[in-house]
Image (spheres, rainbow, N blue to C red):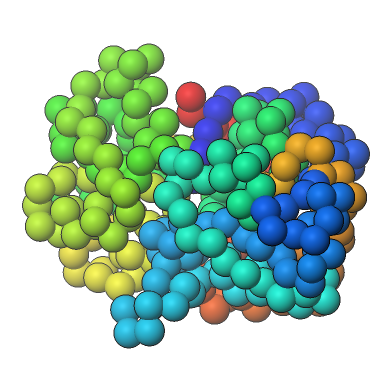
Length: 278
């Protein structure tokens, strides 16, 4: 869900940084030094990003891959997961304000985020794609967006990439920004949009629901794996989170959740050389 051009050297630096950085206190935690001291892992998310995090139509409960992941991480840490649903455009400020201990919300690892926050190693692969309505000429490249009505979720890497296509590449388009992807795909189906630009797992999920309406029509335009975000100074906490995440990799739980939500395992052999559009 975010972006920037990132070469091999930067990827190596990121890997090294992950070995030594971590995270700290939490809003409402019993200790400013240990976010888990009260037995709760408080997680910030934005429940509008199907299938990573969203609200079930019937129960209004938050569900999705990230929700299952956060619950599983809490279990490994011996605490209870508590979720805070907030807007994505303010989610990082909320973390710094200690309203929650970590963010699990389909957050792409970017150089800027790695510099300002403590990010885990990637837990799923990701990149942005173009989704086209089946009665529209398929959008295969950024150039195909020229002169078209294009929908993105605000403040995501797809949003940043589309704006970059306009500002840096001169690809003029009618860029429309939505609070959630459901609204964007509804607009695409209703023909008030020509294309949607979004993360590959999100595009795959929506197109699997209505394959007669729209399809993923481009290759991945970027490589931006997704990670967990924590405050920069919370070093020991970040180490605990990373160890719990690795346990879920090793015991097959991550792969199980991936098969459940994406129909394939996107948690293995992740390309960590970020290629992000900014």
